[in-house]
Amino acid sequence: MPIIIDRDLPAFDTLARENIFVMHKERAISQDIRPIEIAILNLMPTKIETETQLLRLLGNTPLQVHITLINTETYKSKNVSETHLVRFYKNFSEIENKHFDGMIITGAPVETIPFEEVIYWEELKKIMNYAEKMVTSTIYICWGAQAALYHFYGIGKKLLPEKMFGVFPTVKRCDYDMLLKGMDDMFFIPHSRHTEIDQAAVMGRNDIKVLAYSEAAGICIAKSIDDNKIFLTGHSEYDRFTIKREYDRDIAKGLPINKPVNYFTDEANENVGMSWCSTANLLFYNWLNYYVYQVTPYALD
View (cartoon, rainbow, N blue to C red):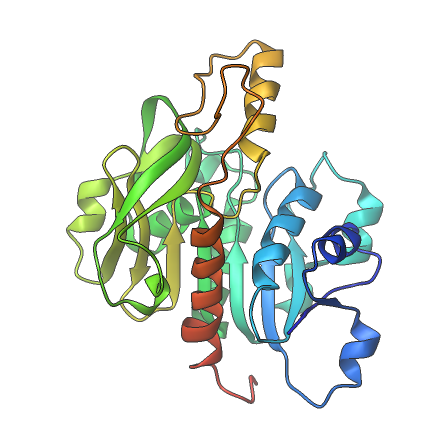
């Protein structure tokens, strides 16, 4: 079944070309079905790229999924037009009294800044509190996961000696959790970050369950035991060339950056083996089905 998005959203044509089942709102209204309501708080500077990546994964299920894109009011992105934000995004104040079946809070390029010094930190805390009470299950990605672990559990982060950058082998720590259903014992997840969560602090809590771990990248997937919060410390949503674009960008800026681990398949750094595609699709498929659709109330309000 399709994801329901505005016909003029840039992702619409991209996903349609990829045979992802997208449906515009007018057609969806004519169907006698309640779609799953998913909100996405997009904190990434590459708004359109991130929209497309997440919508690609959310469109790979049998469910009809209606998307609401959310933007912060205390900070406006400089990398996308105001016209795009006004047309396709809502501010939190416009949706704060509405229930959602699921929510995704993305990463953001502010990981080296103390949480309290992030411009939109107070607004983000309000949104996370809202998600805990008004949303059936929320996925927190990369810095979003760090922010949620800090806000809800007081778990801090630390600066890494060098950027965690590449695609890292990850192993299950739980055989039968539904979020990992269909996955191999070992799978790959991209990471691109300068900080990491306090591993021991997470492991020491009895209200957080670690589902997947990497010897190199640390805790990769965890959740609250009530299934309300899913923490993804990597970027399984990345498309084939996202890491290459980041690598080329940093090289062009003269920034210190190592070649991404387990990513390029040639010495020229041009060809990429996408080893995390099935993992990403299963993660979001399982989340939508088992953590949202199977448990969310039919009447959201």
